[in-house]
Length: 108
Image (cartoon, rainbow, N blue to C red; front, side):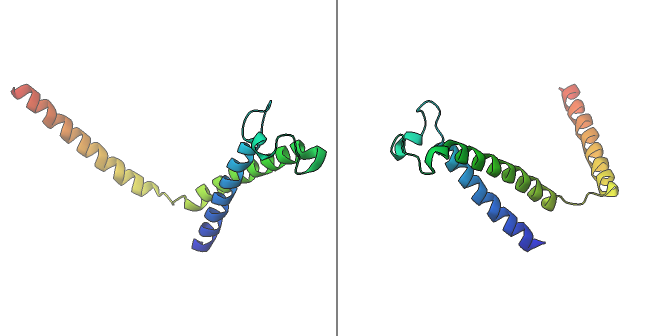
C-alpha cells in the first residue's frame, strides 16, 4: 500500500500544478494571464476556450477523486476500545484539573 500512496500523492501534486496553471491561463474579459501569451492568438484554434475549459473541468474532477483517494488510503482504523480508553483518560484528567484549579481559586 505504501507505493500506491506514493504514486497517488505524486499524481495529486502534478494535478494541482496543472490545475493552477490552467486557471492562470484562462482569462475573462482580457483580464488575467491569458493575454501574456500573445493576446488573441489561440494555441488550439478557434475552439481554444472550450479545450481549456474542458481540460480544467477534467483536472478538477481528477483533483477531487485523488484527494478523496488519498484521504481513504491514509485513514487509520479506529477501534471503539481505543476511543473509550482515550475518552476515559481525557475525562479523568479534565475533572482532576478542574478540581485543582477550583481549589486554587478558593484558597486565595
